[in-house]
Length: 431
Image 1 (cartoon, rainbow, N blue to C red):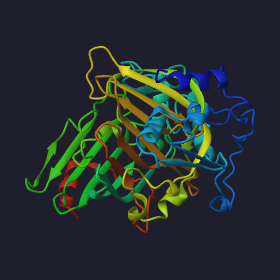
Image 2: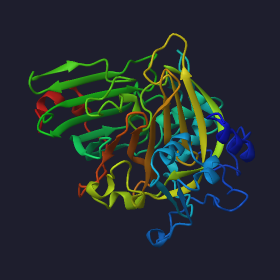
Image 3: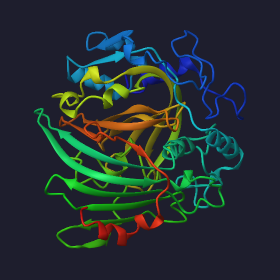
Image 4: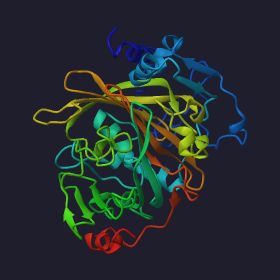
């Protein structure tokens, strides 16, 4: 059976949306408001999950012995983990559609539905006519769906202390980066409009505090809303050189220094950057078991989460949700270490919850999943920590964790723009 068989079967059974306008059948983000026929996916009401969430027991445990019975609701990467590790398992809990957003974001999404369009260089390079909400609530093609993920709602800005880890094939755990970051999303700035949004959707500054070999290293990245209009701007500060360098390669398939050969820059957040190296197409929608409402994950120390071959199943909560399935193959004239990748986008938040990547020989190489977390203070369901498995060499990357930090992900007001300049990065000097 080929690798799309189970997926296409699920999509055929589920059917696809044909709605072309936001109406009473759709949520403010363009998801299906109704639940599924069997009642295992509830209708969306915009409500928060029940207070008893942590007291709920699993309704299904998927193991290596029974995963084939549930294969239509599992991505190929999950099935590969069951094949590789007899003790791997997934704990499935009742589904809660707790994704929400502020009213101003809903208002912007409604406006974007009729005003958002491809930038002058084409949809692969960027978006125009949108701001303050996902741009394409009823996407017509794979690029529009991917841009919804890239421009999903995190809030206007945040600060956090983040740690990345590598778990080798032998089970050894290594801290690869401990850093402080500040992030602004000009695309979600208060009162933003398509006319005021500017050229950059996202600005991020990172300064490492550990391990000792990385202390003081800094990165600064500006991600454009339309790469045909403004290119990615990136700089790095290396303490041994005592100066900031322009770094045009901090994007796409350039391996990250702390990713242990598994993680590239566009693997951040399951997929990030500009989607121009692929031809993305919508395969359809499917019902899948995905990590969701994962507050429990963040209450455990990393030492209790990072298992020998995979993240501790007891730390993860899976639920049945509908996802958009988007397939990307290498675009003509482009090159990428992962010439074929597939993304699974949560219909309620538009964040990618799964990602798969195949190598040049057509072998499944990488499998990533997020840990969707509710931030009630926004409110929003956001993509938190992610796990990326190397299905060929073994080992996995555990990134964007803030489990061992008391403050976690801290929402802030937008920062002074001067903080996102090369001069500011140099002034940090590791501090």
